[in-house]
Length: 335
Ligand code: KG4
Ligand code: ZN
Image (cartoon, protein in one colour):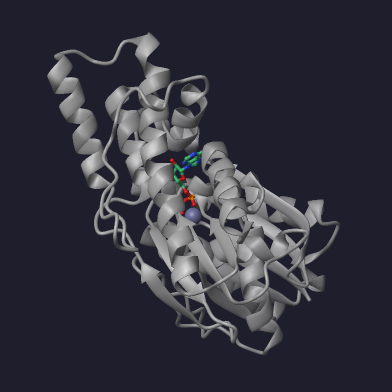
């Protein structure tokens, strides 16, 4: 089945063509990072406008790169939530219009299901059952995907998401946006033991990251000055290590508690090199297989949305024309 994926939930306008939910024929992402970076975060109104400007060209590029035409498409899979409603509506409305014009089915997909589905695009995809950690700018959730494909949530963040913790720290340290990638880059060569940041809620599968930012503020207040340039690698490495520690520990604990041998790690934060390294080490140590998609499939893209929609479309599921964008949607049932 040839499926067009469309993603516009936050600050990336993306379109991709995926064959049979497994083979990426094209994957186009237009990032708005340079526009939002001067504000230190995504400005929703600007994001929606930029999606409107980009969506047609990005889709045409995806079709061209895949060497295909609209008439060859057999379905459209589009993110309908969670995310910024104005941004989601651009992709959703565009997908509905295109599907109506082409007389093909479309499906509204949960963005988090998309992140998990990025693992289906790996050369060696995971088999059910597996534990999935979805870590992004808005979510830090642990799910158990059972043998029949159904899922339950095992843990979630009680306050900030892991990506949010990276982004807030980068803002406090005045080192740029988005925070995760900048902190990873600046932490290279840094000493992650120099500062001891808190690891919260040790016994639970839930997360809490807001205390980390508070600890960083407290450290700055205690010194009575901002971190010096030569201290940045150490503080970035120490802060990153605190986030990585709890993500790895709790996810592995979830797999062990439920006796699951496969773990999927996905979402924008899963592109972090230190997180990936620590997961592979921990998994080897406890005898679990860990599946982490390539970095460009961890950050927001539309190939994962096409992959997520593929099996539903193959089963004949169709989105109804009155589907609406959903801002909060922690479960992952596509419609
Ligand atoms: O999945 P994603 O691209 O968008 C959302 O669904 O939110 O994730 C974005 C988040 C941001 O908070 C960003 O700082 C974080 O992923 N991120 C990273 C890295 N690259 C992006 N966090 C840690 N290390 C990275 N290399
Ligand atoms: Zn995402």
